[in-house]
Amino acid sequence: MTSPPAPRSQRRRIHAVSAVLLTAAALSTSVPAFADGGAVTPSTDTKASVAEGKPTVVLVHGAFVDASSWNAVVGRLQSNGYRVIAAANPLRGLPVDSAYIASVLRSVKGPIVLVGQSYGGAVISEAATDNPNVKALVYVSAFMPDKGETLGQLGAKFPGSELNPTLVQSPVKNADGSTGTDLYVSPDKFRAVAAADLPEAATTVAAAAQRPISATAFTDKVTSAAWRTIPSWVAVATNDKAIPPDLERFQAKRAGSHTVEIESSHSVMISHPDAVTDLVLAAARAESANPALAETGLTALGRVGVGAAGAMIIAGAGLVVAGRKRSVGRE
Image (cartoon, rainbow, N blue to C red; front, side):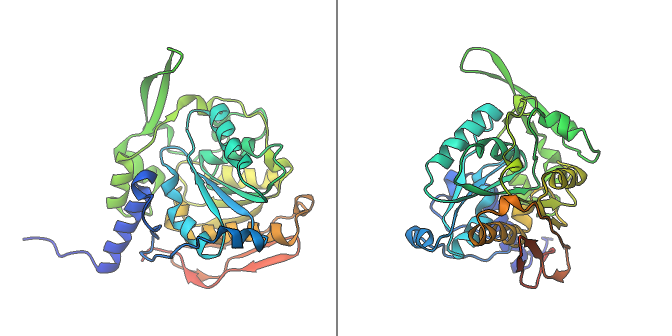
């Protein structure tokens, strides 16, 4: 006897989230898929966005995934008239990755809102340094290190991460002939650590399509912290098993960030794309309203609960952005 087919809404969700987690190359010709099964035809009029004074949003992904992990957020930002670049993070260690992302930023004309998820947060902290076009930083379930810190040291400050025991080491030959080490998450542990609130069918695909990260990324010393001079927004994932939520809160408080808490796994940009998009829009609109926001040091705390309908309010420098009522829980 065969099992009955899953409800149509569930099938749409599984298929869409699977698409988000596949490689960027495979999705480069398709319309961005939303985690809730919806789709938006993105705006292609980038000149209009520049003319309206809107910043370009640059999204930087973290370890073990690729730029397609941002697809649901990209579509939403484009439907709001923003030019978006989902950059390909090399995952070869902080010196290489931050230098590459810095080169991407230099290619962008006009103001930039720079967003980093997970390890991508450390990358943007270095890449944005000395770039006057970067007006706001957004950290999504991310590392947010200070100068002189390593991610290994930072991650050990608070309990709660289940990532280290799941990591598999793989020796690789470097270009100079030396031997390095790549890290990836054991496929059978991927969902529990990185995406427990996503469908199992989707996370099985994501686990198979992982991009490994160089082990040096966790021992490289951070050389600069752009959040010390650029205003920042932070999304804390309260059910994060990769980066401890208390570490995310500590970093946000240290930086004086505008903060929202989302009841989510580490993959918050996939499971709660509306909430993440709202946070990015708040940063973009605050920058447009007051480019001198970096001098305010104001912090606001919002909370988005799974299965609860509510308004997310993000305040800063006299700007209050009220999010529309919605449910951000499982369907």
